[in-house]
Every structure is written in structure tokens, then in C-alpha cells.
Amino acid sequence: MIRFDELDAAKNGDGLIPAVIQDDRTLRVLMLGYMNREAYDKTVAEGKVTFYSRTKKRLWTKGETSGNFLYVKSVAKDCDDDTLLVRVVPAGPTCHTGSLSCFGGRESEGFIRELEAVIRQRKAEMPEGSYTTHLFNKGVNKIAQKVGEEAVETVIEAVDGNDERMLYEASDLMYHYLVLLISKGYTLADIEEELVKRHRPSWVKH
Image 1 (tube, rainbow, N blue to C red):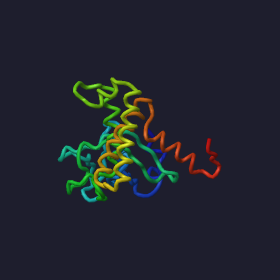
Image 2 (image 1 turned 90 degrees about the vertical axis):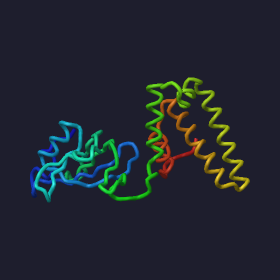
Image 3 (image 1 turned 60 degrees about the vertical axis):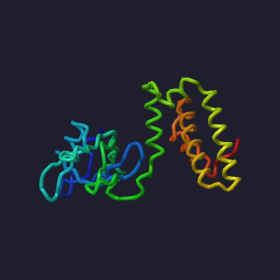
Image 4 (image 1 turned 60 degrees about the horizontal axis):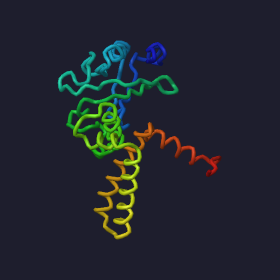
């Protein structure tokens, strides 16, 4: 974790620094709050996001009344040392309206990464009765076969113009694709890195 002394708020202004809160699994931006030194130290010490309320003039831990705590995964500062990015795992809706994010947006945004996290957890715990566990037990060959089958079914529905069925089969394809990635020890972040390489002008196709 970074030290509060490294931040601009510790040296200038009113001692408050804005903290952007981001879901560590889905990358959805959840809310914006402010921290002073005491709020930051409490956040780091307890692993739950605590802000300084500018209206109530006191510390408040997000979720202290609702139970929807924000469990800290990492904290980073921006290039000017005047804003924090706090990545968290939320225990429930972040917004007081009941929405996942104070910025609204579609509730499904970022769900693929959340699904990826669930599949990783299944691989780690291998719970009985889980279809994902069944696939991991069958091994890479069987998982790859399922990816191929779902890809073919997706293509068939797309060519036939059955849009609703295509979305259904594409969802099956995405799920099995994630299982295959994780079974091989990779993640969506690894795919993103590969695609970034290909986006560069210097990239040459193998």
C-alpha cells in the first residue's frame, strides 16, 4: 500500500484526497468519495473503505449501516499524487438507491469478469455437483471439445438468422471459453495484453 505522506493532500490543501472506487472483478466504477489521513489509515488497517464525510465532518465506513462494505483489494495513486484508485470487492449494492454503482449504467456491465472470478473459484474449490467442476475433472481435451461444439452452434444460428438462439449459443461459447482459458492458467487480462500487442503499429502477424 502507498503511504499517505506520498500524496499531495498530505502536503497541500485541506488534507482531503478524492478516492475513485472500482470493482476489482468487473472494473465498474462504483463511486467517488474523499479520504483524509485518518480515513486512509483506517481503510488500510481494516481492509474496508472508510471516507471522511465533508457534510457530517466525521469518518464513515461505507456499509456501516447497510452492511454493504467495500473490501479493499488494492490502492493506487495517479501520476499527480492527488487522486486514489481503490479497487474493491463490494458486499452488495454501492449506491443508496440500491444500484450497483452510483453512476448507474447497465447492471450487466462487467459481468463477464465476475463470471471469470466465479470460475476461478470453482477451480480452486472444486465443489461437488458443479458443472464447472465436472468440466475441470474431464480435462482440457473435453473442455476444448465443448468450446468447439458451442462455436459451431453459434455459427449455425448466426448463418440461419436466428438472432435469439445465436445469443444463447454465444453465451454458452463464452462460458466454455472462460473455462478453457482458466484450465490452461490464463485469464481475460492475458487476452487483453495479446490484443494490445496486435493493436500496435509495430505488430507483425506470425
